[in-house]
Image (cartoon, rainbow, N blue to C red; front, top):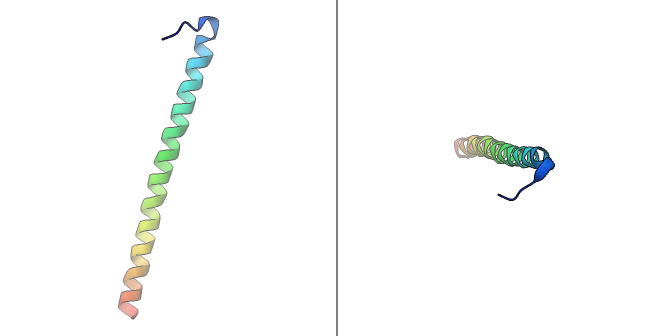
Amino acid sequence: MPDLGKYAGVVLSSYVVALGLIVALVAVSIWRARRVKAALEQVEKRSKRDG
């Protein structure tokens, strides 16, 4: 790891925040994908039942 001097805390905390945001975005994307998939499956069940 490079020597960051007096800015080490700021730089490392920035990396932690950025990594946390990336993890949050991935988690939200997976959560939304599961919701959409469930909604589409319900629509497909209704269309097969009615058609």
